[in-house]
Image (cartoon, rainbow, N blue to C red; front, side, top):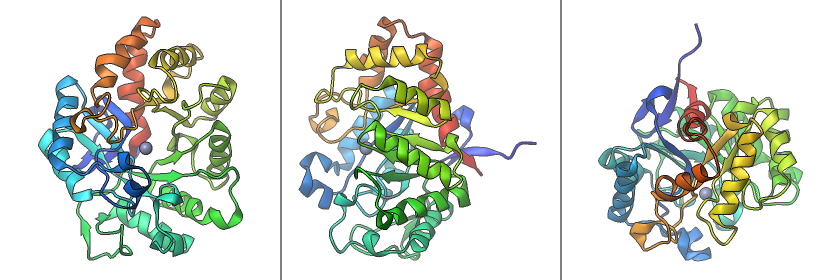
Length: 323
Ligand SMILES: [Zn+2]
């Protein structure tokens, strides 16, 4: 009999068939800290406004959100749990690390060894989310009961120097220890390619690797197809981000990828910040996917079965981990 698998949400494990319509990459909260000093849109810290946004998402038919903010750089763990309960939406929280620019010079995440970082990530996946880690090193006496359901990682360098590998080594080791999926922030398809190579070389199975932001530049479709053929998940989360491209260009790209028979490898999201969440006065809101983008996608000939695959079936598969 196959081992049982569930999605690790902040309210507890959810069976894959009960996960439902999912945005695979969002930011529901971001504390007012160092990231917000770099970009004011990276402050999403009003509980009531996020609750309102998440309630609209649920009313439109949304059921699950993957929150892609890891510890140490603005994750608001207690609020994630509370908003998930109050809005009745599944929320997956992230352990791991973001771009190093999001951590001040003396931040603990820059100091810890690969083994110590692995232990931090594994603790969050098995026991509970650390609190207060923006300013202090993780402390096992300061956690919430909710667990992380994925390992977020981020690369923004052109090439990974040996000295930079320890964060990625830690993420790979934590995934091997727990079976958790690894989400990779990338800023180009080339970075996605070598990061996938790195994780595969460490023994992480391809179906546990999710490469984000691949649709920022809609180019090199053959590289996308090659990645998909290796068995990793391609995440398209630049929908409604008009500084990169129009939704029409995105819809055309996705329709082409679906015609290439990689429907089982695609995940979608809006990668929202304060500048795009409607309740905060932003441009589109979490309902943009259901109300605007998916109807547009249908006009490009995308079938319902493919939409259900990207919004329901693939997330359930990608985020399920051994219980
Ligand atoms: Zn993001």
